[in-house]
Length: 101
Image (cartoon, rainbow, N blue to C red; front, side, top):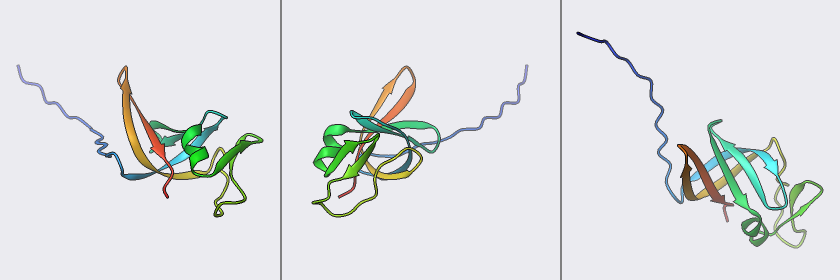
């Protein structure tokens, strides 16, 4: 027997500390959720957002007026972040991130 086999593969090789971009798909009081490359879920925790000078109000994370200006984090917007941690559960990869300084 002889079989001809072809394969398409997608290689994702991000590393901790790397800067990536995601599209925000959820804003809650506990975290901001986003999608990276339309394939991988990511999140930034409320604790990390608060330490970066953000506060949650009206369904979005807004920068505290006493800190340097930054756009609010709202669903549909792009978000630049640094990878903190990768998690895998049942074959799905998720990314925990932090905001750039």
